[in-house]
Image 1 (cartoon, rainbow, N blue to C red):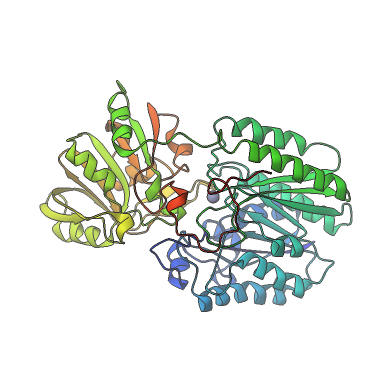
Image 2 (image 1 turned 30 degrees about the vertical axis):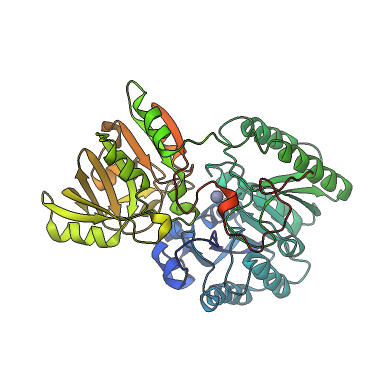
Length: 486
Ligand SMILES: [Zn+2]
């Protein structure tokens, strides 16, 4: 069978201070067929690498089109979104006729003038392939699923784990559904139910762990092809934002509807219990200092670039300095100007530096310090959370002042793994407190060795106070803003 595959992903934060254009995608690296065989560029394929591996295993013909991802930020410039979209569509037209289409999309991508990029891409793909060719879509679970997506896809799945460690399994399952559909062995029926709530739901802890395990078990029931829990992306300000459940059965519409509705109600009932307990800055530091030995990880969730935050906020840094807390490392702080100055000064130099606080009020004020440049690296990378392929950090500089080391870098991203610190030249486990600018993806790499993990709700772009976000187009009522039942 011949399968067309492509990848376009952006998690759009309507309140981010950072614009999104073509260069935002180029920073992470774009795969195009002109680069050469996809098998030689697997790190650029991201999620499509799993589709590609499955096609190889099955001896299917894989035609890989554009694969592009950018860090979360504001809605993409219209012309740049349309150019990337059209590259995917042109690749599909050139590959026709195909037996199946598999797309990796994020599920919460917005562009200027287009609130639902995935729905837009899928409508155009459907218009090219017609109604008979199955189209499968793999999403991040932080997706806002829309009627436009459901109407034009044959089967939609999202990853089930947060941190997202299961894309490979979900890609294989989706491939199997779409291939069986192309071979007329099954006829997927998809039903979606919106769940009116906004939140972050960590699946490594209860009650979500048991809930996700329950879904995995129910997917094995006869006639059930897939159950997807869409957690929603709470920082996308449009009517489609929010959670949902999408069930797929083989030719059984009542069962798909019943599954989506009942699981949607069960998910909604967990909304309070599934939220992680958060600490303010001082309480987080107190708790960390109270741990007798080992390294404590504090997650500065509000400044997670993986959700559209700038990753240069200084609220936690300033508090650590003011409280004279020593033996700390903080990373990754996105500050290309400070990196450049550290490189000009050289390793070992002691210089006045202005760190962070550059992107706006959500970043706080810049911090002026006398810092020693400890380590400079031009080749630092960390393993990607989903596929383990190296992700470049750009140039990195580790600087230290008053017992606090800061890892500064040039390519905005969250630390997925302690390797992000060691690649920059500093062993985080030698420090009493490790502050990571990440909401939860860090967990996969840090949990095993951390003496404790503390989730901090500092001021910042991703602060948890939903009521203070300036939503204008969100569909109400929705929890936790409104008193709502389901
Ligand atoms: Zn996600």
